[in-house]
Length: 175
Image (cartoon, rainbow, N blue to C red; front, side, top):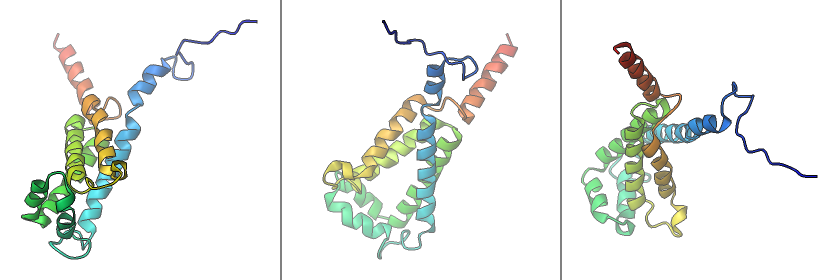
């Protein structure tokens, strides 16, 4: 008795469409949701933490920067932040919120993801650089998670795709 393996990817359960194509279009959506919610939360957490947005003291951005300065990959970057740690803390918090919201709603997704990658890269090179082994520092994992969104953007359930569709409709109306 011979058994044959099914090689087609069509599924009657998805409106007769191709399951693989549907899965591919939605593949980055869980990543968008996770990174978006996480970054919005991280930004809001910083803004509402009375200790964080201070030059010094337990839990302050200033003390954090002074603590990681000598173990960071780029001490000059930490020195730059230490010139005004409170403003740096606000910049990081508002940057995280902007990046998170952009990715969640899918507006300028590639740009938002690039911003998220830059934030994660700067945090990896400064705050979590001294993690040993390296994989204990979560900023590197976040940096890697942003890359697919930088490359692909948001294909579904996004303002970017709605705007693309609208532009296509308008350009088709003028032909």
